[in-house]
Image (cartoon, rainbow, N blue to C red; front, side):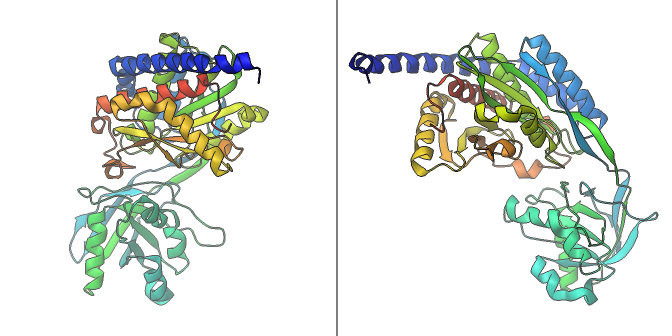
Length: 453
């Protein structure tokens, strides 16, 4: 290195660091003062509502977001088509008919078939695990409704019964399955979510019921008291429908071809409003980029917001984005996903795919430096381990992935339920999420270094 340049470097780096700190301070204050982002989240939740792939709500939200992004003056606004699954819930109900009679709150699982006309009325067999189900054997399961009354041991363990429960039950001849919600006990609140079938295994109806009702049916089973349930589901899967990823940018001034992408998934389940999952993330990421534009903060690189299609029941938005960017995936310096609800943000997790420990350590150090100003809102914690379902396809190409982390105290009480509504979001936490996304996205876009070196 030229000695003159070497001597000048510390001063230049200090000036760059000061400029980034100033930008971060301005973005944090602008985010905390912003009113439009919250108003847009209210409109999305209250005037459009849930946004299941293929639904009228999903189509309305796409048209609305494109129009509003153009009003904001964002660049490169586009909505490239994504063909998405089109599952329709239809009328559905569940009733305990013996040993006493009561309605059981329920939500059909996404992708399930419906019941025959008139429903299915059958005795239940309740288990706490797949191992217990297998130990019963086909003789004790055939023709019955399997109830998965599994303990809540965190989302990762419990959600396996939602995903694979119908397959495992059908392999033993079950007529249908009912799955305890993937969340803590919550005032008889059922949870929906995607389920799977397997080629060569009979397809049977699958629905979510509340933790309380699953545990009741388990107690009856343990006591040797027969319990009969009538299940009716009008679910149907229609031909794929046209959806879209919604995209907008604030282009860089020095390396506009290099991209920092951030966003959330615009679709939701057809229960509640999709406020935490994932409407708040979409509006927060969008607002973060708009604030960069409003403050005329043009980083070296381009910052791109994407509202991804079809995360909930197909992951087609993330895959379509990977195809859309083509060879330019190599120019993505980072991808940031928010898909863990909108409770108070605490910081970010980072994964640099296939990176040796020194590279990962340098990336974490750079991210800590960029996020340091977020200490003012207690959102500067940086840990290893980041990414998300929608950015997964480009992470597999080596793009560093970040996930916005939150305190996460109550998210799974509302996740995939009728209770996922905007009143569960603290406006202050939403604005802090905007600030965190804005500071990190702008900092990564303006940094002289890249996370992956």
